Image (spheres, rainbow over the protein chains, first blue to last red):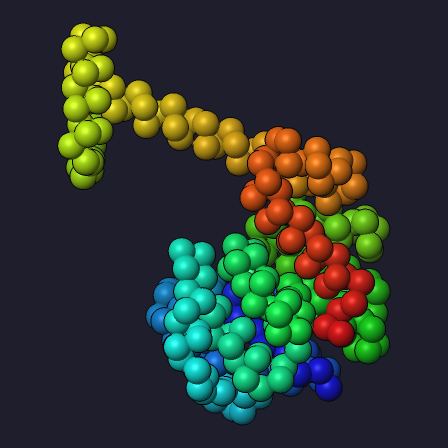
Length: 175
Length: 97
C-alpha cells in the first residue's frame, strides 16, 4: 500500500474518470483539511465537477480518504505565491510532516514552483496518470483498461493535443 | 452593429502621460490607442499559447532539445515545460513508486 498525498485537482480527475475508488486497493490517500474545504466549495457548483466533488466528500466522510491537520501553517503560508494556493502548499507540507514520499498534483504551475521544496525534502511529484500506471502494475486493471482510462482522462480534462497525450502514445501506443 | 462594452482600468500617471503623448502624436483618441494596444497584446498572447503548445509537444516527443526549446520559449518557460515532461514521464515509468 503506497501512501500518497493528493491535491484537489488530482482527486477530481480520478473521480471524474471513475477510478478513484479502485485506487484505494493500492494506495492510502491522505489530504490536508484545506483540500476538503476546497471540495466543499466545488460541491456547491451545479456542474459535473460539483457532482464529482460531492462523490469525493462521501468517500472522505466514509473514511476512505484520511484527513490530516497541517501543523506548520507558517511553512505552508511561506510557500504561497501567484501560482501556489493554500491547498497545494498544505499538500506538500502535509507530505513532509507525515513522511509521505509521493505527492500527486495535476496543477503544473503550482508543482513547478514547489519543485525546490519537494527535492530538498525527498518528495516525488507525480501527476494523476501515475495512479493508473500503479493500478496496472498491481494487475488491478489490464493494459487495455489502462489505455482506456488514460484516454478518458485526457478527454475529460481537455488535455487533448497536449504533452500528456504525446507521452501516453509514446508509452502506451495509439490510444 | 455590435454594442461596445465599457472597461474601467486603473493606470499609473506616467502611463497615462505616455498615452496622452501618443494621442497628440497620432491624432487618435485615448480609447482607440488603448483598444489597439489591448488587441495587439491579446493577439500576441494567443499566438504565443499555440507556439508554446507546439514546442512543448516537440520537446515531449524528443524531436527538439532543451536548448532549442529555450531559444524559442525563453529559459523560464522552457524549464517549466521540461519539469512537466519529466514529472509525466516518471508517472508513466514508475507509477507511484
